[in-house]
Length: 72
Length: 164
Image (tube, rainbow over all chains, first blue to last red; front, side, top):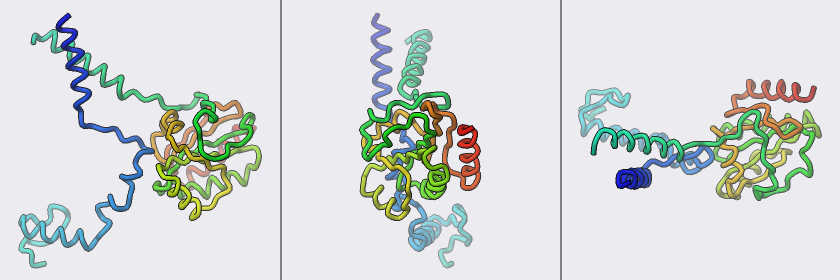
């Protein structure tokens, strides 16, 4: 009996603490918004990429050419 | 905790997970529930009995929906009284729907599922999704998404087959 109660409690706890949310196709209004697009600001993305590969010396990792010196 | 208890725990969790994620989608062969019970905003046609009905779930933020509208409008004009295209909007804000309709004017019957109750019953897998119902209100064809001319041809073939 104790085991069953434990199982029930543990199952309920496991389900309640899960952080996953299932977004239905008709609930994607916010996700489909223009502001959620990674490519909404090409200049901003280019600048961020430049800073990123200059700092990380990891140019090319995201399809950007160059040697990682930050000079191109 | 022994192995047996662990197994029971795993099975219970799996069953519980299955129960909570189970979906009851409207599929071919099912009958569409009475639309009057879903508090849809907008005027429904007086009677759908005996008519072929295309129930199209759409949203203003969905680009393929915008592409599908001219085709649905064309179908409505082509088949006249024999076919009812019922465009069910699922936007959270009515203003977004109004803005979309101003940009894409159509002669379809447009209603808004403001409380998202009908869409929760139909459970469309994509936006847009359209269900083609026969005269008895039974789902005969299902379209997930809109794929341009291919979908248009499928609509016509399916509607013609139901009209025979």
